[in-house]
Image (cartoon, rainbow, N blue to C red; front, side, top):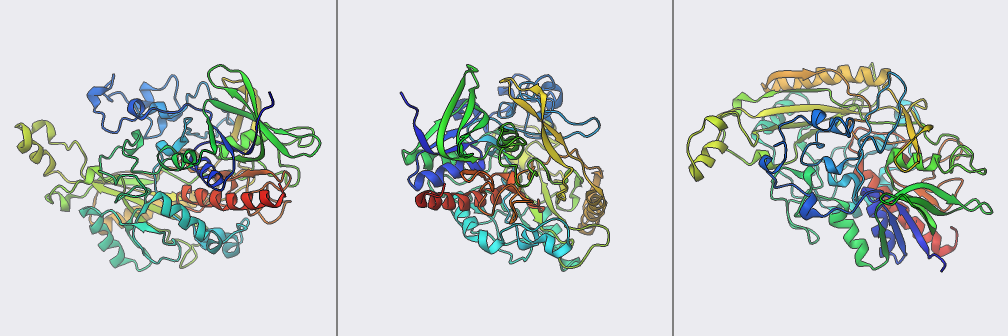
Length: 566
């Protein structure tokens, strides 16, 4: 019996894969989605309301110790703990390599929904300060699209997903279509007043987050339990299984194939076009093939590039779609991360309980460097995220007498000062030497050659980091907050989990892998729409832009299929 030929094969079920499936099936295409991981059971796998006593180790063992045998890299992520480590890959089954002295912490999730199960949900548009950054400072290349071109697709995503936030009319941070904003805590309001009074080019706003503040599209408003990264039973934050996947399945046009570890894209030797995807069953380790008219790669930045590099053929000896430019794998970026300051806000200690611990969001200070003036030591800029809130278990808990409602009131109305954390997320420049290649001497549990990641910060990131720690100290001091600790050191690249680049878009096939519609210059029925297509990183969290780019690409795919051009 002949295998079916789908209209499109979508590789990956994360943020972009879910959107590709939704958009293409709603336009009438027959789609198969390949996901390397399993399909989760919320009743068993989501632990948003679990208590420490529900866990074997009571969540008392540090994750880096508890998970060091199987997840030494993944456990560096704050969300990979005893509650949620099953959302992250087994590092031993999924190895990768780095050069000596150049660590890169690659944080991954393999399940239906990918990292949308445990992402941070901060959702910001890029502006033309990012899309056209090269025209402003002369470094690198502009994106082949502008904010105005992407704005309608941002809006389509925002209206479906539900982004809570406030309109601010800032040139460096375009407004989205918003649900009502969450509230700043008392400490954050204090910071806002102090910072905006002293600096007229800095704003402290509520974070823009893909969490519902009211019922939306059949999903319930957030009830502020505060444990989003453990899975959300009420579907109140955006994830593929909660929103885009049900929409795609409702069309009757989607075939979901979990436990399908893609090994390479199958190329027709006569036409040079993609004709399918080969994969290994995760459980049986048997090889399979699936065929389609279009292949849409949404496996996440490094995985997508690994797949294309492992798809090398005689026609494409250096990786699929890499003949014209040779830049596949190059220009890997992440955001600079971990520069931060923390302590307490003593001045608001006696304020009443305001559900601070359940609001899984914070304040945001949009980029202010190299927007209104030119910094003498570095180009581009950084955004700042802030939280000042009382925790679920205040320090006086164990010394509080009583039972029942009165005990709960005394715990909540703590006399303790809220803790604060303030950290910078900076743009990493696209440098060709930061790259992903294939290490054929190392394979994963399914025999697929592993990625080799060679990525370091440059002088620009290091100069920016110096300014970040100075700016954080200065703003905190202006607000009168008490600093108890600070970290002036950058983490290894990768740990911010905002990796982008390696299959960049562009206007010239000699310098880019994809055109402005995410279509391979060399393989016209191959599209890549995840973070690997980014030309530069900006400093904003990238997922909202990835989703908007995917919607735009799917409109183009549909039209080109109708015209017979693919």
